Image (tube, rainbow, N blue to C red; front, top):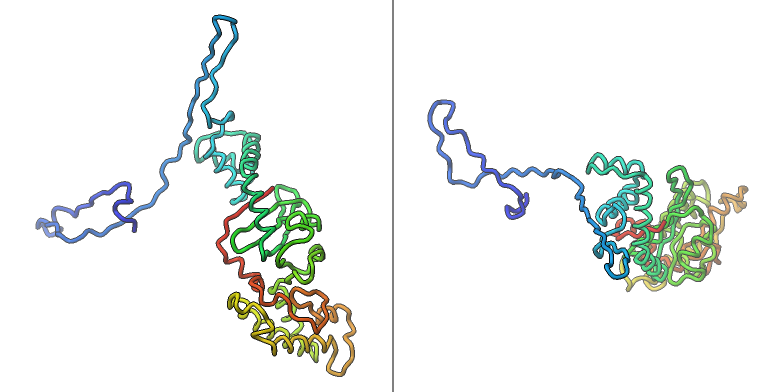
Length: 334
């Protein structure tokens, strides 16, 4: 319940004056039972009219018309309505037709679809500067996760790109999934650690700066661990090593080096990779796909030599999927 000072209206409900038995009912001095009802107030658009009068100079005859006060938009849609339209179209994914219908039914305002479209453009222009600041921030972040997914929008095939950091997320809705988009988002030579899937678009990132998403790694190792023979044995060993590494990564900056806290773990993983994708009888796997899957790329070093250290396994990005739990401010570019 809200505090009484935060309640808009208080109604005192008294008991009946006469009991069913016919005797009078005396009110008690105890505290009443509080019952609060939350409701939406009647919504009606606030319409302000500005009357611009005209005048004419008595000397030269020049015509003059009053200007609008500072801050008053030249169009019909005010700043709060613009913010509402922008939120409905982005955060709530409503089409322009649905936004028009919602405003008409909820607020009694009948805008055209063209006016809604122009409002989106005005909101985008107003947010251009802060969005560019967010884009620059995520590009320079010491650890960032980059991902993309298909995003059909109003009949058009688009891709939603996301650059995720612990403080902020940058979303970009673009018509392409090509490498130039990733380069545009984080630069041709990105700084810090870049977390990504194995999609070839991200191969421009220096392997020493790239952390393969642990969620995908563990999924692959789980699949390999279910195979028969030495392939499954290697997969189970790497899967166990993966699950041991994740708690180390979450332990804090003082334990972000795999070498110091867990040299046996690193040696074990490297040894299993050296064993290679072979059967228990020493025969190479017949299927090339199985061979590639068994020789799984360890994080940060796709295709690296088996005796190289497990770079990046202890970085804070190792638990990439845990980033979904962060409370992010959102920035969107269209």
